[in-house]
Length: 233
Ligand code: NAI
Image: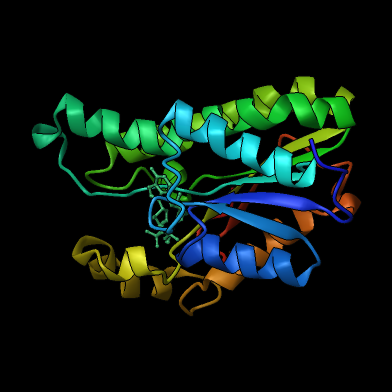
């Protein structure tokens, strides 16, 4: 292992675009060294693949000797009616959105525990509160993240590690803009929000930045809904 890097180090999954990219940019501005795990990057890391995740985390540890922050953001949101949803499509969403959270958290946890410091932030979704149409697989995966967050937070706190989730509402990202089903809902949802404008990736990044900071040391197991006041939970 190299000498420990000066300054905090973060891993952001799915950091190539959208919310993950905004989180990466924001943490970088905060003075954090950020490593992106994304299948779309040149050094592709597939967060559903245990070997890929283990190798990528080992690389970060070799380079910096520390991991202070993990943002589990990578996710997919295909709309499929329950009648048409087969087990393979169900598994693909659960693996990408939920197994990845387990794999990445599991890989960084021993080092965070050893260093008695860590911030894990998991990106859930406001879909969990509303149970969107044709999204049983997605909503189950995002609800799973909330349960995972609460349970891990209970044991991690005594090791100086906090674990929280954020639930974005409708946020304008390349993933949403590429989905006709998502786009069809956008304006209606905006009109129902207390703050009637499209959500921006930076809105989520600002909250993640706080939860990832040393100052947020007494907040754990929480879920923060960031949806322009669409639903109050
Ligand atoms: P996006 O589709 O714009 O970007 C997702 C990124 O994740 C992409 O760069 C993609 O390459 C990466 N990715 C996907 N599968 C991967 C894998 N197996 N391994 C590594 N990287 C992978 O998505 P967006 O909108 O930025 O969403 C980010 C997260 O926020 C997702 O978990 C999504 O469910 C959640 N979310 C987004 C909302 C929105 O309105 N945009 C609302 C609620 C939650």
